[in-house]
Image 1 (cartoon, helix red, strand yellow):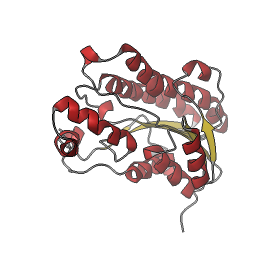
Image 2 (tube, rainbow, N blue to C red; image 1 turned 120 degrees about the vertical axis):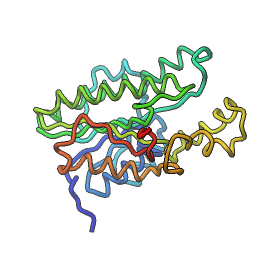
Image 3 (cartoon, rainbow, N blue to C red; image 1 turned 135 degrees about the horizontal axis):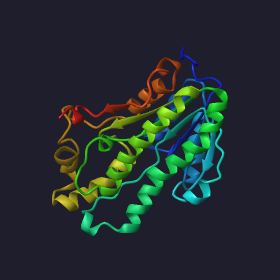
Length: 250
């Protein structure tokens, strides 16, 4: 029988309607948490919430001005929502760069800011930031994504330092390419950019740096998120946990 070690906890997962976010939602629900699926896609959010017996929060996290006065009731906050745009810097649209930083760095700051008062009051909290191997290493043609993920690493560490006296931990999970819709959408762009067939993108581009030659599965990321949310990880904070098949070992 599954241990209900998160019973009574409220978990908010951004981008929770698909991919890593949905896998995390299932992991937390399986362990007894009440899960809030935060997602831009209303239909997908409602469907995911039904799957996990939770609730949907339909929200545009890129509208950061609307988040400035937010109060967020969360014991566990997973900052996962994100997008990708592949292009060289000199062709990269400034508004796309700003959009990605709003969605993937500014909104996590505002959500953490909104959640910490309740976590501090309860003397317990978990902030789990879904970063990337690109939070630790750079790749060409991903300037906004890499910038945002590097910034998320710093945000997570500051949250860890400030949250420690209040029983709040903050950590990053840093996967390589995960088998998700976000990664699948990159394949056509990568093929065009590198002048290769789409069928060769995974092997020749996405798995070049990893020692283990396969994509990461979303439930592998979720299993680590589940452990970080547990009481057994109470001394783990300010860390970056790679699930990257050896990419950052180079």
